[in-house]
Length: 231
Image 1 (cartoon, rainbow, N blue to C red):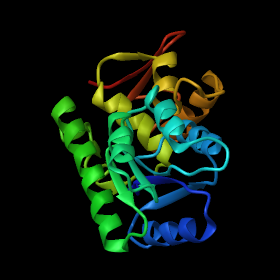
Image 2: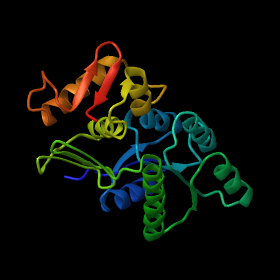
Image 3: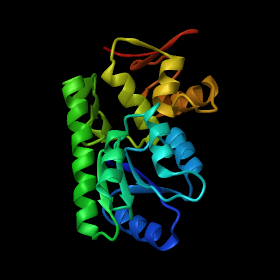
Image 4: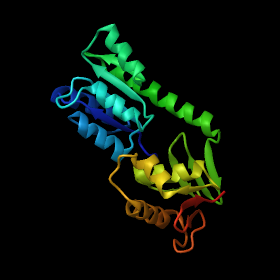
């Protein structure tokens, strides 16, 4: 089963937020919702979304400040959705790190086209950086574009976080990734977490892909340092 792209919606207006959620969920994406800026930053850290739809007129903190804060630790694509139509405001948002700017009101097809474009650009950027379209070792295949993991031809069902962990290790196969590096990449530098959540997720992954989790063949533990994927 393909892992759906996760879209974080940061929007306080109930009707508009529900409308966006309906569009997202009915078009093969997974949505998570924040109704204020601080919750949006927290969800970005904890869920590591593939795309953010950000309203600027939030009740607790201005959306521009949310955008700047997110850009301190993440390159996730951000599409601003706002009633602010002044050219100067659009330029300010784009200069601050937004990937696109959609003004309210907007149609569902326009929004979906912009979502597809932003995600496509993210995938292309990743493919240029990593070159390899997939990881294939001893029957384990990770298709980065399709976000699909199979073992001996059978689909492996991973959670979003589990897939991100496996994908990160696979893209760096043969390299030891430290616990801190993995935690910051997956959960962000502001995550209130420690090695325990990483160990729990890794144990779940090994139960799914390893014949004998106690003697792993694909993902190795470098005691006291981190993890390494079979090269």
